[in-house]
Image 1: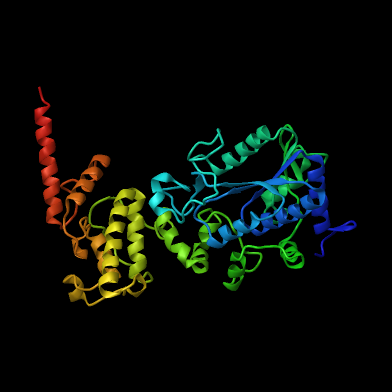
Image 2: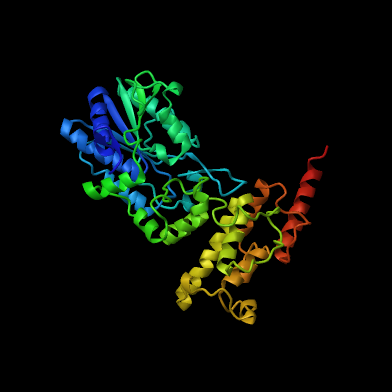
Length: 435
């Protein structure tokens, strides 16, 4: 660790800061993300706390749609011996979605989207069922929660409180300004690595002057635990200066969604259905909920990708309809898997056109064409019209006033009969209500 400040290197400087925290603050908690910086910070803090006979708390906000290896690393950090309380928060919060113009926010752990969650709720997490935070409002902004938690924590632990944040000033100009300009903030004991939030409540930045080389140097030389996802990033071509670990749909991360897919394909498959616009929805959109989609498959897109794109495009306007099609497609694929041993990985992009038209062969093209043709009952996938479908369609129509009209473009005769029957019912209802 070559960076020298007077007689100390950055490691010694950070350890001195942590000693000062535990000596001069009544209560200390650290905010961790599962990333390399906050991970190193809290592991160093644990060593110092052990030397001084102190304890501390940890706050972790679980965004749900995260790398499985990040969650595994969080479980590792929970084993640090000097932790008193580990606040593993898995609450429905509003997060930035930079991959979709039509859904700029998405809600992690949203109960209304439970069937699409990337993974189950952690057993030891703080959820809506056991939430101890009176200030929490479902759907509130992540940034608001962080601030309100700090105030709540101080109320629960009266005295001088420090919140350790693992940020480094060299990562961005904003972070540098946050720490380096004392005239713009109030500090504790004139330490530039502290920022006063309110009376006796401070954010502290023990590793603010570290570089990324210092982080990995500490991991190597001190034998610290680390998130394995960084190793995969490196093997996939990202240098240590390019590696970032934040929520997957933020402004910086939208350029790295392909990286997410490459590193953890098993998680990526679930992420595709979780947030509007993850795959292609931010590029294309549609203007009708039901109706033949006037489109064609781009040459550089596989039929499987095109199927997902169509589902996401529908989901931008009507999530319930997207789930309806998704459910039909899943049953269709499972039938072929059970009856003919064809797994999802074995489904071809195209099959013989005659066999597809005769509904005797499975292919992604057949599935995509069914969606394109607005096959609500999915007859092209060998489904028949059911009472359950009729009931679902009635619900859609009640929810979406312009969902179905005579102008709806569809070749399905049963769907046309449904439209005519409903318009006739509405006409009779209107006449009966007249004086």
